[in-house]
Image (cartoon, rainbow over all chains, first blue to last red; front, side, top):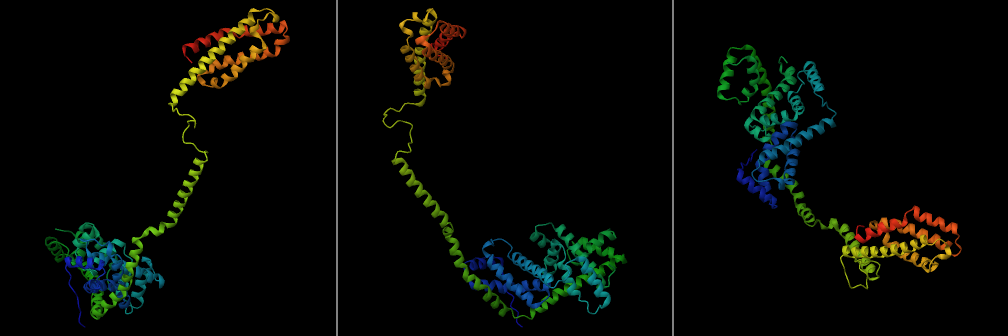
Amino acid sequence: MEQKQVKLEEKEIASLVERIKQGDREAFMRLVEGYQQKVFVVTYSLVRNREDALDLVQETFLRLYEKINSFRPGENFQGWLMQIARNLSIDFLRRQMVRKKESLDELDLDREVMAGAQSDPARFNPGQMLQKAVHLLPPRQKDVFILHHYEELKYEEIARRLKISVGTVKSLHFKAMQRLKEILAPQLGGNQ
Amino acid sequence: MKDCRQVKTELVAYLSQELTEGEGVEVEKHLQGCLACQRELEEWKKVFHLVSEVKEEAQTVANSIDWSAEASRIVDNTWKPIQKQPEKKRSWSFPGWRWQPLAAGLSLGLFLGAILTYLLITTGQVRFSSRQPDSNINLPQGFVEKVDLELARKQTIGYLETSEYLLSELLSNRKPEDFSSLLTSEKLREVLTEKKYLNDHLEDLRLRKAKNICDQIEMLFLELLQLSPQMSEIELEKIRQLVEEKQLILKINLVKKELQRGEV
């Protein structure tokens, strides 16, 4: 299948945003074409369901348009868009867990992991467990984890986005990974 | 050279390729000679691998999607609410309608207030000046008060002089029938009328001392008026004693002098 990933320059993005504010449908189409796949990778990595992830892409662009007038030239457009996608995905997961009455407690998650790993390792889905574990990370650790692993940003860029130091990013990333390692250790055959 | 504790905290950044070249070399040197840290590194690699798998899975699913069709779907679904936007903007560009009830209430209140004020003025129930309608002179308030006070002082001095004269008459004659024509009932009534006229002026705090003595004289003259036709000698003597006890003449003189000096 032909994949059309449009590369957009910063100047062009500013121009597109202004045109969208004027009601230019084509400008909006170009912006969607330029960012929909990036948004999808983040939403899918978090929710791990194709249709849910696509709905979240749709919702992200809807929110983008609703807030387009509050976007100012010079702001990081991609960071802004991805933050909308990230927040929508996290909210979606939270609602989903509540709806399915799944555990939102870290201790319960640990028990679930242990039970799954010991009783039937073949049925144990590490990807699903990683998804839950990521969702249960503290907000700042979660942000750093998603920005680094799913949006592929370097520490310096994350520091700029979150307005914190590179040292803090390094520390938050280490803590996030340590927590995931602890949770996933039984399945991964580690010593934790 | 870094120890195990330091290296273990840097393994995540090392695998993320976020260490400087020098830091990376130091970690690698330590790993070459440390089996514990090598095992730790292997465990971290498994976690990183799992995370990468999820990301790769997302990328694989993304590659299976027809993004041209998806972009059209997104724009079609999103653009409908956009079409409604101008209506929203128009409603915000004319926010006045929200305040119409308040504006109408205020206008009505002002209108009724204006009519009521006009009616009150035209019927004479409200005046905006303390000046009497038939007066063409508009003097400063302080000046008018000063003139009033001066007038009251002169009238009080006159009243006190008359009273002093009458009281002297009272004290000098030993018998009621010896009273001169000055201390007649008619004369007493005149003095009492004068006092009534003075009463308004004597309410002024600055004339308080004069008022006190004037009131005492008034009481005495009222008593005399009641007794005068058939006044016995004993009664007359009592009144004389009262006048002397209260040192009325002395007090009259003192107050009169104060009034004359303008000390009140």
